[in-house]
Image 1 (cartoon, rainbow, N blue to C red):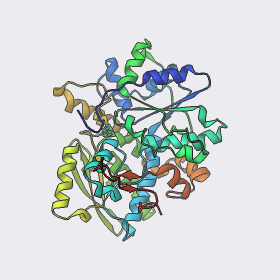
Image 2: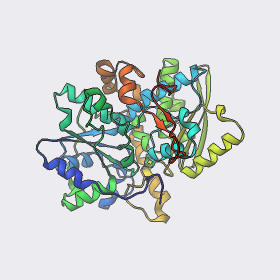
Image 3: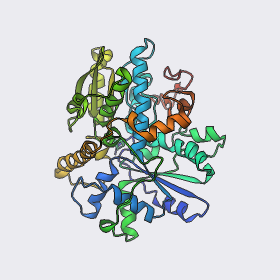
Length: 406
Ligand code: SF4
């Protein structure tokens, strides 16, 4: 059993049904990047079949008032995370490498086994946890909706997200509205739970008409679309960081950025941004992460790297514990198919980088101001806790002590 919840089986569909049945609630679904390339398998489709439009239709048929795309949240995560990276590289006080923190199983692992890495973890929230407070603050305000009526439901390939949404610090909307009872995300269900629910309601998924996401959070860049693959966060971040560093769009050398693609557990690359030459790594699987970090510790070579992506599941979220089950001999083939499907959506998208997304630009213009602004820090950033000694004194990195919270 995975101690960090990445493969724990809990069913939360009954909670979503209760919210839909309550006429006083507005149920908002958001769907993570990898769900759309796994869900179809539960209905007999080939692995990697892209079912985005049918998935959105199914969620509306089930009673969702709005269906938003977590790929938009991925673009928002990249805006903040790439800005953090820039700050770290230009500062002597904020340590490098920067580690990604969008995988909750990896975050729990680091908090428990490597608490000394906490100052290295990006304080930017994961795509799901960054989008939920924006829905309950800006979207609610813009549309004159009482935030208490909103039930945010995320649909994910990830069972560990069920724990992430319960982290006490994931409550920026309650701070914004001064409503202590508000949580940013209310319920998390997995791809498999959604598939079973669709089957139970006897919805003819295969023949559903396709339907688009709701606007405001319905557009995403190619960078946001590939978040579900190991190396996808890194590639997306490089596309936007390149622009932040140089003022120019990332060149074809970075799109696709092959060195961080593929199912290998450890991928390394060197990136040149103007006069910055940075070394990056993308790791999937916690065993690989442990070996990689132990090696850095042993050789005192942390500063050789500037940016390291870690995803707990081999291959990244496409292989998450909440995806349709796959027989062991088929795992590699299925993961390759799911990964290729996400890369294909990127290849077919003209807008490659998160900073180019007009919905992201509007959100900053009208609400957030700029990455790492006061509002962005409040709504989009988090902090981590030393969990190495659960019985002893807890050592906390708070917004006051986190070097990124400037
Ligand atoms: Fe969840 Fe993705 Fe991390 Fe797996 S890799 S635990 S699916 S966030």
